[in-house]
Length: 151
Image 1 (tube, rainbow, N blue to C red):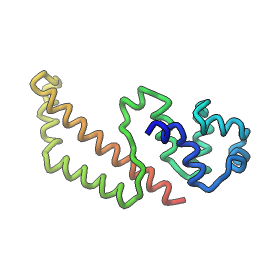
Image 2: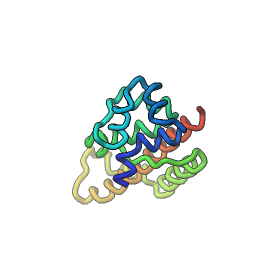
Image 3: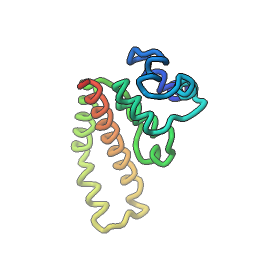
């Protein structure tokens, strides 16, 4: 996983069918800079990653870049798996249905109604939060898949 993360810029460029030279030219950066980003010697600035995302047609690149660059972001935003629109749609729908079937929203409201999460409620609250993180992850995966399919 670490090698895949470190080389996400290279992986996305190759998936877009571009050479380092062609990509660097279109991004307005030097081949040496692109090579440094792709080998993990340097971290590209956000504006370069945004341009890469547009050029390579992959919103997922931005998500991965920000998660790796910012530890606080990683603590809040869940991992976003790369998947196609159909799989991402199914995953999101299944997570929402599971949340509803488990009456998690009702349980969350019972816990929150006194505006205190006491020690007796903490385990259940944390489990509900994990379920919500799964829904957020699935929604972001669908957003990334949809944007990549449109181009």
